Amino acid sequence: MSGSEDRLLIERAVRGEREAFDQLVRKHEKRAYQYAFRLTKNPEEAADIVAEAFFRVYSSLRNFRQDSAFGTWLYRIVTNCYLDAQKKQRSRPAVSLSRMSAEDDSEMELQLQDSGPLPSDTALEGERHRALQRAIDALPEHQRTMIVLYHGEMLSYEEIAEILDLPIGTVKSRLNRARLSLKDLLSEDLELFRG
Image (cartoon, rainbow, N blue to C red; front, side, top):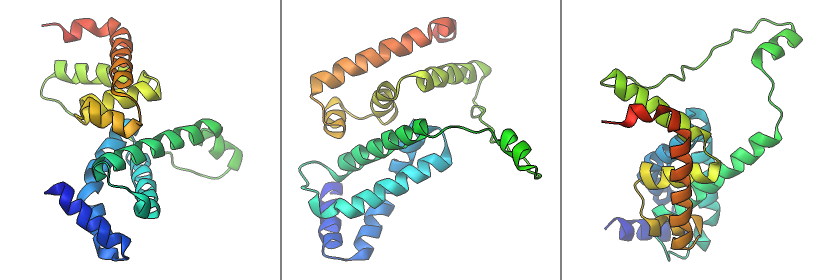
C-alpha cells in the first residue's frame, strides 16, 4: 500500500500537482530527518541535509524510474547530501567563536549547545550509550553510514546495497569491517558491555 501510494503521489507530482509533492514530503520527512540526525548528531545540520535532499528529489522526480522504493531512493539522496556536506566542511577552515569575537572587538555571547547524552534509565546504560556513540562518531564516514543504515535504520543488506549502489557482498564485507573497527574503538570500554 505504501509503495503504491508513493507511486501515485509521484505521478501526480510529476504532472505538476504541488500538493502531491507536499504529501510525499510529509510522509517521508520524519524518517529522513531521523536518519540525517543519526549521521550528523546536529539538529541544524540534519535539517539542512534533509532540505537539500528534498530539493534534489523535487529536481529529479521526473527521472525517478521507480525500479526501487521511493524510500530507498530518498535514503540514497540523504546519504549523498550528508557526504557532500562533509566534503564541504573539510574544505572550509574552522574559526573559533572566541577568536572571532576577540578579532571583531564586539561583544558576543557564546551559547554552547548541550552535547551531553540523553537521560537514560540507569547510569550504566548512559555510560554504554556514550561509549558507543563516541566510537560510532570516530568511525570513518563510510563505516558510520554502514552502521547507521543497518543497526540504526534497521535496513536489510539488499536495501543498503540499493541505497549505496553496491553489490550485496560488498555491503556485507564493509559492514563487517565497520563492526570490527567499532569493536577496536570500544576495546577500552569492553567492561561496560559485559554481563
